[in-house]
Length: 330
Length: 136
Length: 104
Image 1 (cartoon, rainbow over the protein chains, first blue to last red):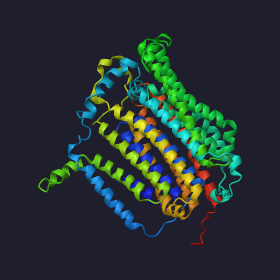
Image 2 (cartoon, rainbow over the protein chains, first blue to last red):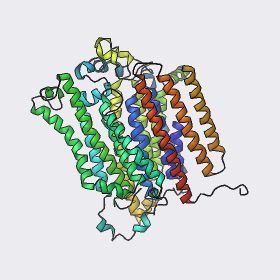
Image 3 (cartoon, rainbow over the protein chains, first blue to last red):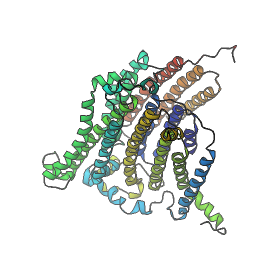
């Protein structure tokens, strides 16, 4: 994969660099799955190999796709190469102190983790250890991570979004956006195939969110797949088609509502008399005993995360693809 | 840092801990891309490569020899005393990395949006030309 | 059952090898896409059929897992040729010319 990284950085054509980056992401995903980290591999496959590549391509779409190579500057690159090699050697000088590969007694594996592995099923009735620790034991992290995605969506909105009235007075408009050389909405096969695939993608994504307790999956992965299904709708049909069905205001409201759901579940725990995000207190309103209440709380929280991530991905794609103007796009 | 009498010992250590070497190489490639490449999009790609290197580091220190995926099977769920800790790969590092991947894609999105805005102003992605345009 | 699985997976790998050779050796954009699209889809489907054979020999409720793999095969069977078609269409609109026997 080092080879992939190097190739991705050295290709002149930016579109090719984006595709090789997608291949590099996919290779990393396979390596992590081989190491036993299937949740992480799932997320990387959905996010890195899928959505990241689409973001880079839709950024390049509005701009020129080739890199004009400047002569000279090799000395600077070589100098940076030397500096970076020295930094790498400095990092590697601690190599002898690192634990060996696969050592079960290393400090990472032997201090806090055995509690989670042994007790998580009794406390939360969730067999997937990753989901239970992510959404229950370390729920604050996930809440703030969802907030980070929300903030990124708002940031991209505020950087790129231009109202259409102002863009009419922009005289360099034609110089910036090149007309698309390929309009996929002309092609019947692409449209029909995507019409067939999108409902199944969404069904699978809902299954991933709901089944996150028992198999690799959970809120993020399902949310990204849902977002990717809507992005597919935008790519295969026209961007305006997507915008006619999902208006801008409703998109932003739904992004905010996911974070709100997560925070509201935490507040409901406070109202019932426990700490913030202590789902066990909710067992009087949710069916089952305390452990099942924690399982249900995890499900609610994952749904909130999924909603936010889904609409955030769609909003980021729309903003990147149309240069903020929401009129034409990928 | 490297002792000449312990040269072969270091080599052995290097091969035994080769996953850390790969991680450091990936991180340095990403860092080099962020500093030395002139094109803004290549810098963003370098940032993403750096992030995946870090994630590889965390996952590789959590991997155990012949470990299973950290999802308990049905048999183990029924009698929870049968959980052997060393059978499962470390879930804690995977959780931290799940967060890291999602935050990484959010940061990539913001970086690409900024690059696009810069392109709107200067109509180039190349760093030297942008600096020249600004000095005029 | 396992022998069938191994045969299928190795057949899939042979098809993949043919695809890669075709990708490198064909003279023209369209014929390369042709090789990539067909060979890629077919070899993936055959390898996944081998995986179904392996999965059906272990575990209970394995028919559910086999069904899920069958759904994946369905998805790839529809999605991959469509993507190939989209790329060829884009190449056509962008002006790539087909290779003729008399031109270089």
